[in-house]
Image (cartoon, rainbow, N blue to C red; front, side):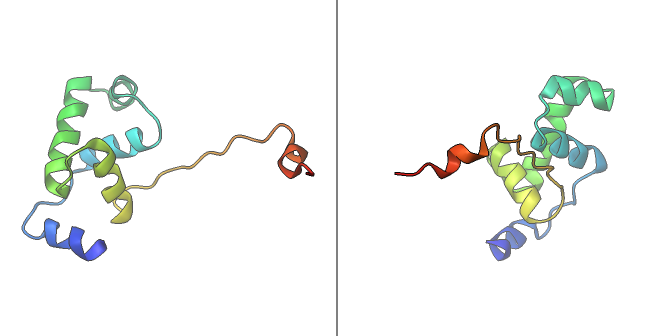
Length: 94
């Protein structure tokens, strides 16, 4: 898959810092409005950064954009797993 993505990237400009930040915020669960507030810009501007990043990475959707950005190590995603309330319930005896 990485080779296929690399082929898409040939001749395209790299992502700007704003594009990368927009992708990271969305990948880590922020909405457009929350990302805009954190970046100090309008949600329309965040949307525009994401649209341009989609073009540059050859992605059709935002989900595909985030997946490609993670695969290419352009962005980092902070995974969060909530604690399990009753861990013993995972090991129910039959």
